[in-house]
Amino acid sequence: MTQFVSQRAEPTASTIRCPSCSGRGTVNALTNFDPHARRNERAHCIPCAGTGVIKSSATICYEILSEVKKVAPDLNGHRLLLRVNPDIARALKEEESAVLKDLRQSLGRDVTVKADEHLHHEQFDVMAV
Image (cartoon, rainbow, N blue to C red; front, side, top):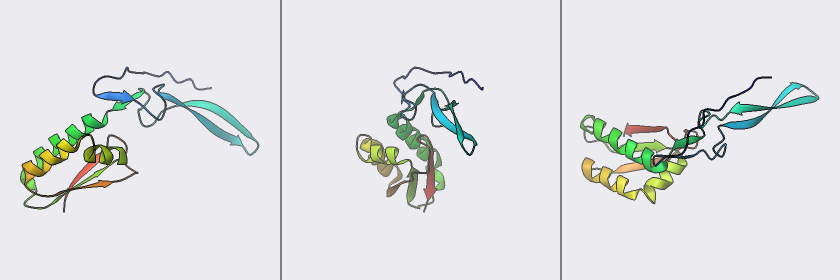
């Protein structure tokens, strides 16, 4: 039987406890090895990669701001589309709305936020449209 050793980290100001594994770094996984038999095993949590923490929404919002400011000269007057995880989309529209306002002011153009449930919490795409 495979044993997983979790390399858990403690939440900091820029991270939060992983909601998928409640900060444990591992999750229970049922494995079917026979049509009539299953085995309950522990597996590394995919969202936090076994650390037990993920970046906070605020941290990701400021990473988006930083990335957009890097690519701003290459936009050539196009509008901006941000494809983000639904939690980050909510944060950009609510508690981190100042980041979105700063983006719009610094670019001088509209910024559209599109929630994509297939994106990992820390993943985002910046696209000129």
